[in-house]
Length: 332
Image (tube, rainbow, N blue to C red; front, side, top):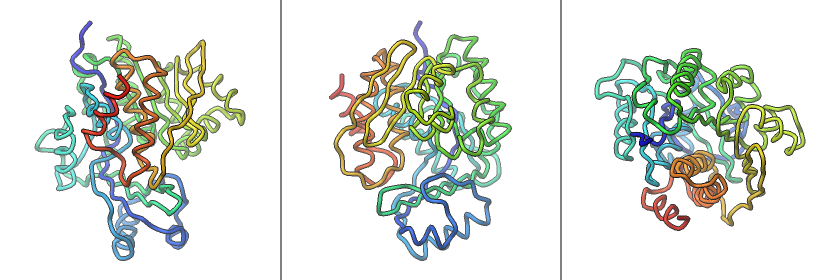
């Protein structure tokens, strides 16, 4: 059956503001390195003032984990819809315009609610690790009211961002989306998003899985934290109880792509990393593109690994549309 969209994604809408910092800066400001920390409005404003006084702003663009994924998938040719919430402010306008320029359909209208659009301050240290401070702003209020049931049920895949587990209204929206997807035979995919979600919001994260998903994305730390298994193979076996298939990324060690009956360890692609921001997001976007076009999970993961290798070799979470398409063409 032909569907209007390949992927319908739900996620936090955040404008990414990226800076290069040293580890001393993180220590001075009491920021835990390598994870995402939720911040209040005043704390985010204070941090931005300190960053702008000490470091150049490298990038400013629409972001959020699922948004980066859906833009990558769209650039490769997937017909995509992004469900999110931004305010009727300048950053909200930037966000909506970025989605439309990337060819992504969205629920965002020209006139939007009053409030403040969320921001994600991304601090990249010399070891290429990224540390994020996120002020959710109005995206914390994303709810089932923003759902487009017709678009969702006319999609092949529903993709859910794990960061949504921190919001009551977002969890309710995800639960409703699960029901709509099941009614229409839409496949469901989920990413754990960040080790902090597993560490601090495990019960809420588990609720996003509902009765299970068709495809799960996580890294090795998230897999171990979610399952309580130190051994990665044991963690994979546990994850098979909640997902029909999945991919566990392991950085320089490659990735494990698994189904209910098989598992493969795929080698990483050679690269020189300068910034890991967005690598996992583009990885998921490339996989979603592949599986939505009928590719095998293995072939989709190989495209994703090459894509992620190029993302970490530059500053910023995304490649150009032309580069995404070139990578797709090279793997067809």
